[in-house]
Length: 332
Image (tube, rainbow, N blue to C red; front, side):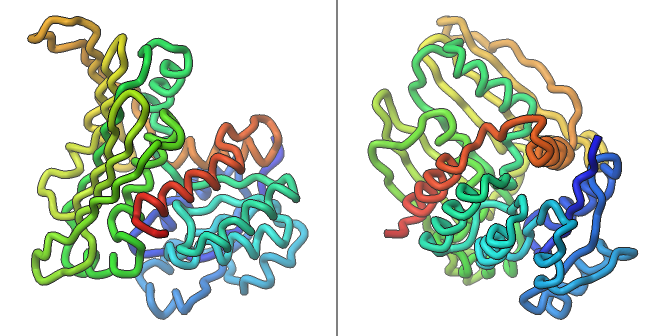
């Protein structure tokens, strides 16, 4: 099996950059790590992140993009710079894995998608729940019609971050909804497609004097009902209450928690399925196999680059998802 020669541009403090690098390093039978670049003064701004790259050479962005031996670029900068560097990699003809959801300029994202589409290169984004075993299973069941008509989707991804993180949310349109709510919007969009109406409801809790939108919420109207995404950054116990609830005419499926730690880097999910019309029915609850949230994501990226599989999330899907995220964040 051909190894993918890959380099990483950027890292970040609040997202998944260090973990993506570690996952590729761990999967040395799939990836050959060439090196990394730290743009936007990241070495000075994020010194605690640099240790993850110990033992690997540092390059400039230009050096990485001009190296014809490099197959793929992983873009893991701060959110506001993601599309900028992904577009540079696209223009260099590289396959791309980019942290979610992209930068904050629609025109730049549209140019990125147009470029990878023209080049027929892989464009892969870091929506981790796409690789959750129960989410994958549920999406296939919905596609097969096993849930019947979909009435609503309710998705929550809550946290309890310190003040500094919530202040940082000022950098992003609608704060938490852009930062983490994009994961939820991705799941809703993949199940139900474009909503008939979008009602942004994000706000600030004003706790600790923070005025950024640390309470992200959006309501999305569909033909058969209303779906919602909620992501509160001030909720104690929020991680264990992260959930996806899909209500269909034939059954309801609840995945909660979406992820729970078994041990370091090893997770599982819990699912309850309701098929009875009895009011007191407690459903059937099962626990998933153990998984690492990044390993299957990056292994899939490698398989797309090699041409062994086709990415089910198309260029057009990623563009329409991004546009929907901006609408949910109140961006006109």
